[in-house]
Image (cartoon, rainbow over all chains, first blue to last red; front, side):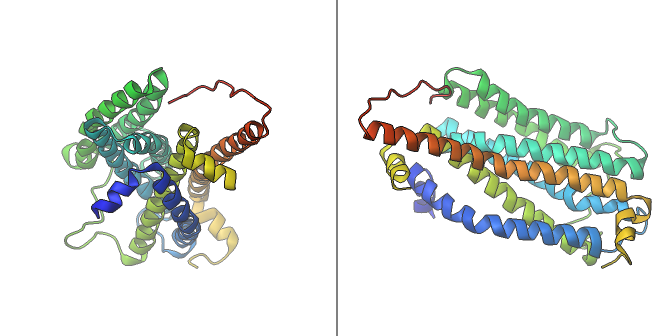
Length: 245
Length: 70
């Protein structure tokens, strides 16, 4: 396990490993997404109260779940980069920011579209929506902050601090539906006890959550690879790979 | 399939516009999210490959100054 983590910190090893992983994971991800979307859109039964509009859940919830998970990863990579000054942690932190931002934006947009037929409004300053909007700004903040610095080492440090401070927002997002009166329903899927959702709707939802996790992984790796090719252009291992290709 | 016909699946009892537009608005960024880093890496890769050939051929081409140096 530790040797694996050590190897991940080595750019040439990571580059080879991620190349193989992406080649396998990308077709799997596309298949999962297509199967999950068709299942959710056409096969699953409609909700007895919301009718068919609830089908947006199959993209809204996975996007939101993975956007939050992406933030954990970004903040964790930021902490590793601050404490141990590992370059690959920097790369991971920066690569997760745009991916997380897109997923958060998808969660917000699909939520707005779902809100219209269900709640009668596109937008409301509800606790969960507002805290998700803050999440989007945190992601965009990390992207913008990195670009704002001339000195990239200082930029990475500032981004790491911002992403760690932003962690405060994460429990607020989770608990927002319990702490405040909200239009959002409380969690339907529970790890312990009975879920408040029928299995005919639960299975496609779980499938889509797995698909979005795979997609996050693939995009993160692709972003990191693109970054490595540029930052390591003077390195011998990359020159050799490019020369051989 | 839950719906009886394609037009019923399109209409979804009046919710079709919301549901299908939500899926369409998700699909586009997802595709871009995968495609853009692939494109960026390919561009850099080709550029570096051309650079290697140039310097290998001994033309003495200078490395152009590029932004975002780390």
